[in-house]
Length: 219
Image 1 (cartoon, rainbow, N blue to C red):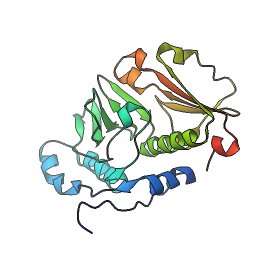
Image 2: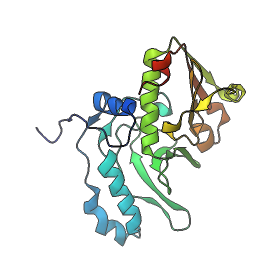
Image 3: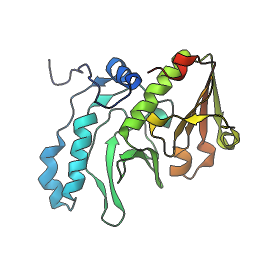
Image 4: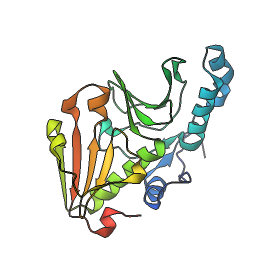
């Protein structure tokens, strides 16, 4: 196998069965950069060793993983890949999480507490960690497959959604973004661009209706 050939993927431990299937069936692992070799140079430029360690841990778990396009955020990162940490001791440190698929007003980053989010004019932590981001992609793919109806709501109308009787889906570890489960419906709320770009018109919700029990959970 040559260096440019994608390889089949074994999902990292700790994901739900649904996300594990998604990663192993839909994802590919492309050759990833070894960032440990940059350690001495990065330390020379003032990056704390602990932040480099965080980047290495991310790269070992997720580096080189290419997943299908996300339903929002202009399809998400092309490939999950760490790079040189950015920030300062006063502001905190962020780790680039992968290049965008298109020219964007923000980048995908791992936050000071391990959150997966977008950094534009301000920081918007989407999920508590990268596992949550991957779980959300897997749930969206699952919901699209089984839903009888899919409704998209944008802008301030998102705030009028009635979530009474819904429960938050825990495995996506939602922060700015959340998923909600009802009796036959899943709702994805995408607030990251509205927060990260101070742009309430970017609010978006996807409502997946007509789901049976497997469609609601699916592993």
